Image (cartoon, rainbow, N blue to C red; front, side):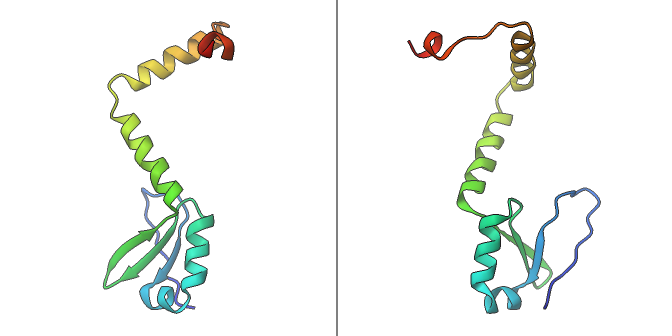
Length: 97
């Protein structure tokens, strides 16, 4: 099996790493792995890495990136947590009528 091990200090997520040749010869397995592993599958060819991930995972990453661009998001989350801890909550009926 042509699996490439990568040890990156800044990256703590474990990914499934394969060569491009292995990926092309075992495409069904690679698709299944991309579907089940949140970190996706890293495919390496010519010293470049490409990541194959499930579409839902990609959409979640994009949504997270968009939220992180929202000004004062951390302040808003912190305030919401404080309000929740103090019992300041709303019911579904309060919110949606």
